[in-house]
Image: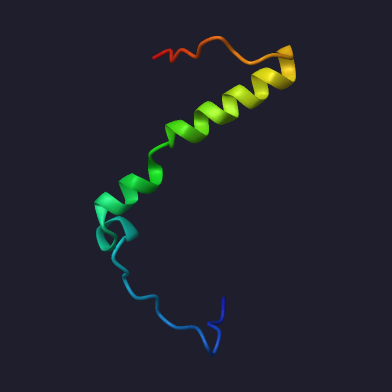
Length: 60
């Protein structure tokens, strides 16, 4: 049958990252920056249409 490697170690049961990390810091990393998103949308609109957008709307 299968042999175990000589240097094989048992894995320790690690605590999941979500439990180790600060939930508020993780939330801040996951939230989109509205200023950046607006600049990005404006940039792509200008590339495609050739002018700046008159308004930007958010559709939920």
